[in-house]
Image (cartoon, rainbow, N blue to C red; front, side):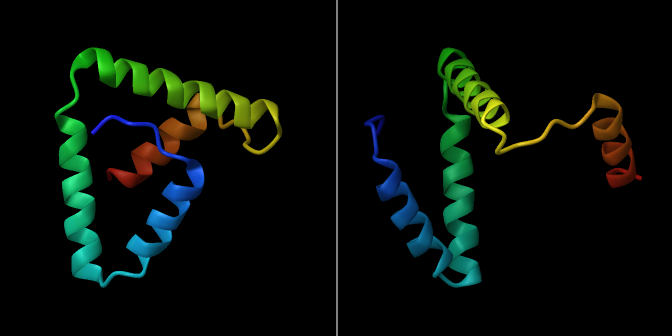
Length: 81
């Protein structure tokens, strides 16, 4: 299953998934995450590159803000204490 999907379809799917009960959402999330583990290295690299590009575009358009590496490190340290 590797076809292109319209964003409106993804939005509708998300609305439907969020309307599920907690156990059904958890099962769906588990299956979706497991499907990502099946990616080969080339596909994973391509997806990460696309995500990085999307985030850069969001930042340049002013819809996202930057966080310094030191802030990220401090937050990670607090989370894992």
